[in-house]
Image (cartoon, rainbow over all chains, first blue to last red; front, side, top):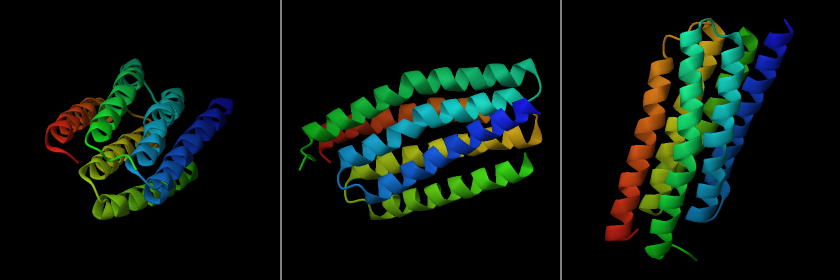
Amino acid sequence: MIGTIIAATLLLSGCFLAMLAGVGILRLQDVFGRLHAATKPSALGVLLVCIGAAIVVNGLEARTQLAAVVLLQFFTSPVGAHLLGRSSYEAGLMR
Amino acid sequence: MNVVAVICFVFLGIGALFTTVRLVLGPSLADRVVASDMLLTFLALAIGVQAARTGDGLYLGVMVVIALVGFLGTALVARLIERRGG
């Protein structure tokens, strides 16, 4: 029961963070602001949702896959954002 | 858990709607790449919420594939922007 409540809190906060990122992508002014808004939930939101799902899901295999998702996102999301930011800076999109 | 999953899906739907608006409007190619990468993140989050709702990890392999393919697409388009200009 207490595990379900913790999992529900983690899932809700992760999804709320993702919705705030959507608002940020729509509202912020240039590419770098949108990149800044988009990179947070692809690391922290995925981490929260994966921990929340790993609490309530059945089986070791599913938990291993969730851990693999968290590891992959934590390594690839900052690198991808850095690549995109650097290339759009060199392409002259800075205002 | 069902009510929580529905609320999570509503959050994800609103965020994906805003991101789709930016994907259509976005003035440069980099904006569209950021928006489409973010849409993949929304898909991964929705798969995670669905796994928590049903309790079995049937579609979690898709989540792993999304985490890989999203990075590959972003890196390739970043290379393209660097070569061609935004």
